Length: 70
Image 1 (cartoon, rainbow, N blue to C red):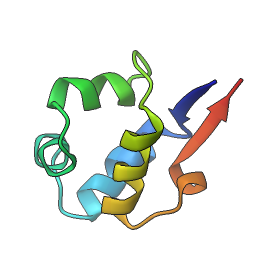
Image 2 (cartoon, rainbow, N blue to C red):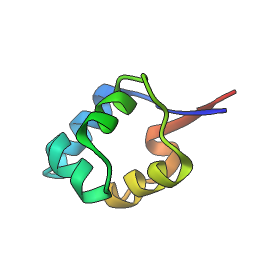
Image 3 (cartoon, helix red, strand yellow):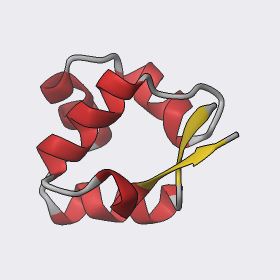
């Protein structure tokens, strides 16, 4: 199973609305900017732990921004 963003563009808009750049946000959650970029572009999939960090720091529910593909 893979965890992917429902809408990568909407995620980037959410980052901006919350006052983060991709660089700032990746540092805040403890991953590299390159890894976050790969997750956004669906080149890599976040682990459940990373997905949880993303949702917690953006104060969103998992289902708000992610979907699970089988």
